[in-house]
Image (cartoon, rainbow, N blue to C red; front, side, top):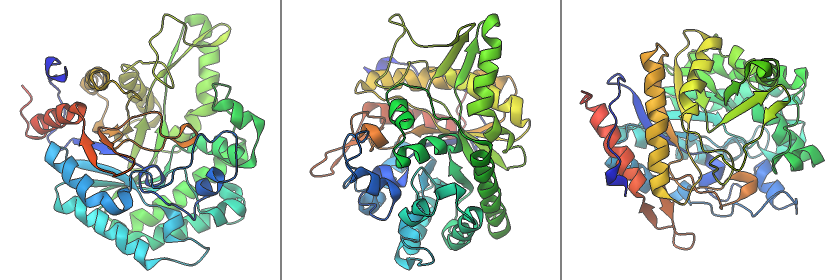
Length: 404
């Protein structure tokens, strides 16, 4: 039972963000103008099932925000769906703009600090067809989109992430091309390597949009980077450093001039002289990867070692499980590791749990359940899990500066 797990004490500041996160395509439903919707309906062998109505968050967001606020959380991270806002190149939907303006304002009205992501995995189908991030003028198109959504952000967004997990974009591009390497990656194979051109195009687009946000709003602007806890034996140091440099370091270095960097951590990666060490039968596993909550503290330390004094927000951290007691255990242990990192001098401004609601987990469909809130796939009725109440009470205690 979750009530048997005590509330830990933390040394976080009073304005620390205690929240939860979602992404538009994963919860809104019927994102028909996106590249992922097209992929889901292309008979791709990697897609378990289409997203369909998802959690119907597009229509039910007021109820969902009410729940988050009632739990005691003080922030909510969500993404704007570019393909809804600009379903065809140059054709802006004012209805979509108004929708997201209401969402940001709705957060503010409920005491939830809005943390807004401009692009979270999905792209407009027209942008993908043009070449995606490597298309001619991609950075300019993304900056133009950022300019378009300034009225949304100016409803009260305090933190704005331009691109979510740029390190995964090459995998997404390979997936949409139908590359065998992308299919293998979904089943535990090696990740497709990003070319220098791909990395540079993402960084250029990020900086262009970041500068638009800085010029047009008072929000903190950055991007979110997936980080593993990279562990190694001494003889595995070279392999670990090569892996980190290949998949994570370029995106962290690009954040050195940002207002913050989002850290997204779920597990660890271990290395010895032979390379990466895969989890063995003795290791505890989730439905997707190794269960290792303490990875979070080491991940933010790793981020600090690269970005220096740039503030850090944990923009995703969670566990895919049907066992809600296991979710509470995960949050508890992850936050203890985060608190230790903060005590060691890492400037962490918030923790946004992934995810607020059970969601469409990309190629894996609706199987993995990350949410603090569940829903019925027929009626869309929400069910608040015990983990949500436990985490909400923890947030409430610390938001009120009751830390001993």
